[in-house]
Length: 343
Figure 1 (tube, rainbow, N blue to C red):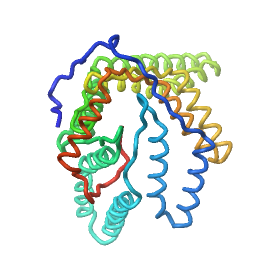
Figure 2: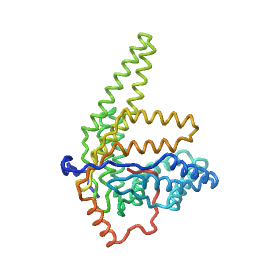
Figure 3: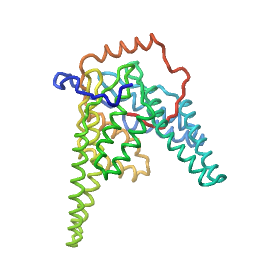
């Protein structure tokens, strides 16, 4: 596992790397056929088929995402995901029954135990998603630990809230770094060299924008100007949507593997337009346009990324495939709890 205390530094200059656009080749009409069949079979099987539906969805998006001339594979089966969901349903049923037959104090203890298990569940989901994802025949791995997950997803965010947001950029950076550096391609660990200052810049810019918008709203109320009030509220909404593309750019620029990197440039205005127009069209079509909205968003994500190739990706894949073949797969019939996390 890559230590969280280890300092990650850029491994090579970006100018010496060959830029290769990331491509998504899916089409809305094509995905609609998969999506509508998934819904029909899920309804007919009272939800049981939803595990297989998830596999079909993931395989479609993985298989249509092309990086440096190769696409990704999703190797999990519906049966594996169904098992994880049955475990989750069983836990939910047990907690529901306990709430009816035991004292609130005892039920509170069970809830605390469940909260204590959350870091393990998060790690299990990340491990499952990595274990059953592959690129050029080599699987990914995730090696995060319980206590590191506690810090990444609970203690640091809590510190951010206690400090009224001052430490939140540190929390966001730590969580991103935890996820990236504990992932590996075969046995080659990813590195993350985005800085806390980059996250601080994003948060500070948005905070300044929100404060200015609130001031505009206050002035609008004092002058009874509906236009100023409306502009202020729209600005706050736009700033809240801008958060995702700004974080997307910081995150992906920080990811690197054996000198290979990404360049990320998701336009904020484009993302806001895609998000709002997708939401409107999906609502107007009563959900039928959802597949087109998902494919459109996938195209935006891919078009916003460029893979900076160091020229060694093929040799890395070949060496990792050979090594994994030599030591043997460590998967067997291992099942994990799928909670839907992943990068």
